[in-house]
Length: 264
Image 1 (tube, rainbow, N blue to C red):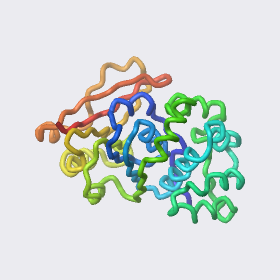
Image 2 (tube, rainbow, N blue to C red; image 1 turned 30 degrees about the vertical axis):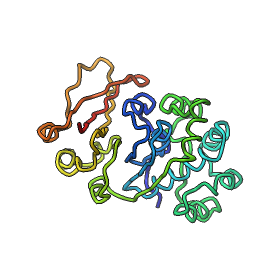
Image 3 (spheres, helix red, strand yellow; image 1 turned 180 degrees about the vertical axis):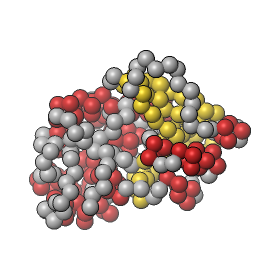
Image 4 (cartoon, one colour; image 1 turned 90 degrees about the vertical axis):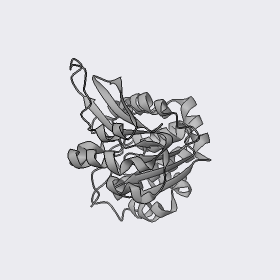
């Protein structure tokens, strides 16, 4: 059974990814819809490790990267928005298959040839009409613009990509430090107290010297809500010399906040 996943991000990646200065750095990001991977590649990440607890999110992200590598922007848009409620067309898949990470090819071969059909992916991603889907895609992703898409394709040609089926709490097993890390809204999908303890204890060993991490993303659907206070407990990080701050941005009809921690 295909587990629920994000077909496209609902975060304004174009608003906050550029703040993390990841050009030439190794990056760790949740795979999710794959838009985080493409956004990091656009920002010039040297190599990207994408992790996710949901194996189907990894497969989806791997396919999206292949589409971005293989097709011009109008082809990318046709792939996902021409028939967003229907199946992936064989001729479209054949055009990108060679760029799919080898570990995902067997799955997508079966999927496209109708051997996996009980639970189809929804290509549009947001559950609304295709026109609204495209509007959200454009609003959230810088690579939706022609110039940035061309830059993304150029960067993907030299960016090293790795996909890891892993829970967030197991990330220290990677035994590597990263210049930039993006955890999206994982905190809202797990026990907050357990997540906060992880961020303050085991997570810091993943951040390289001078590295920065977005450890939480949160939407606020009331534009008149008073100034936020940081609800993610980061006192342990502060005591260990990490700096912590929040970035806010306007997104559609609501405000969003990204919590950043950084190692000096």
